[in-house]
Image 1 (cartoon, rainbow, N blue to C red):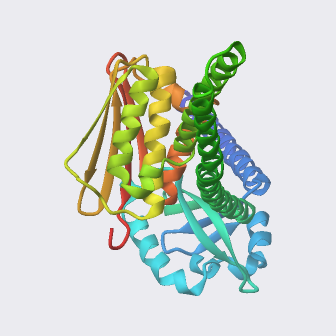
Image 2: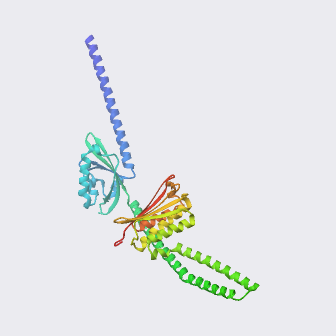
Image 3: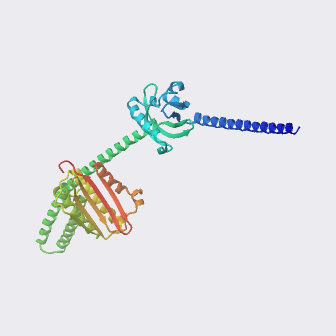
Length: 387
């Protein structure tokens, strides 16, 4: 009787355990089904194309978005090598890269990004951005590829590049036109107005001599005083005209060259600002084309203008040197030092102008500053052929 009871108890325990095990299996199956349903929902609802590739590079799953993106039916792609979605000229390279990628699971970062060309069923090509995520499973390695059509972005980037190139061409044209106009105005002021002022000066000198020889008298003294005042005003006007001509286009730049023009600019800067300005160079002269000569002089001119306005400096040093392939101009002041934020403010148009001048000639302008140590403007231009 006791043995029968014991057997019943053991049987009941086994049944209970079996029931519990079945419940746990059912629960695990349900959880797995829920996970699969959740994954499928994510897989199907992704705004991008999603392709799952096995360790041999075959497509094992693909969502509707990817199917529509490449113009295939899902059954046409399942089991195919993923290279079917890549233009033929890139397939070998991609296949080699994919094999290397699959061979090093620990070296693969999540979300590896690629920019590739995709190929539709109709053979048309389009740029895609691909993000790869490897997944290790009990059945081996799989890679989930998130594929996004970036045709619109690429087109916008290309249009932006073209627009920037056009704007730079326009800026270069405007710079040339501006320099030509400044040169023309300076020449006309020198030739036309200079001749008129010279003629007036000669006439006043003649009139003054006649009045001095006319004896004495109140009217004579009055007229003589007026002519002397007019001569003084005429001299001041002539000095102003010469200054304007020099600011527009210093003749010394075209007649004696860059080195002489920089030395003249340093002297003129000191006379106007009382800030010591020196030129240091081992070059007696440097042969450059018109554009490079003008660009270097204008950058120096703009740099000195910024020193006078903002630097709070007491001295400026200009250095000019030539290397095997470039000419380098440096303007260094001992002022307060420019801060990085000042280089990008709305008032830094002059700095942008310097950089654009150099860029148009294949060069660059760098501006550095240290608080209390001053600011250095360096322009480097490649030498033109034969320069």
